[in-house]
Length: 116
Figure 1: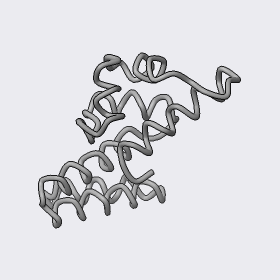
Figure 2 (figure 1 turned 120 degrees about the vertical axis):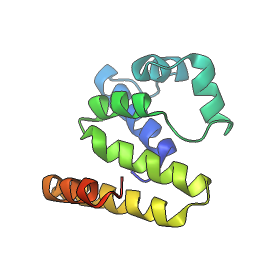
Figure 3 (figure 1 turned 135 degrees about the vertical axis):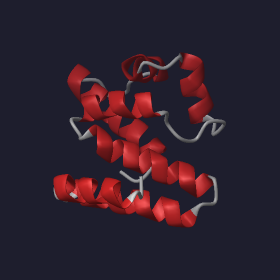
């Protein structure tokens, strides 16, 4: 997963699989992520691009992923939109480290270095 749209589609896929359905409504995805249907619509139509921290944490639970992994993806995306490439790269590096399973040592290192 590289961005909020992919996270949402991952949640949709898990919900579809759990329910044994071919499609899952935006309402069902919104409910699972603890966001309003209006917020889901805004994301779908590009008015809101990134997920909030709380939504990323709910998505992580559904996707059975480390919450800090999705938080790093979301924060990288936010830094990209704010035109902060160095900060975005730091968040993407953290996401990559977490994804490869080296999270404990690297997360500690990032915090000690003041990067986060």
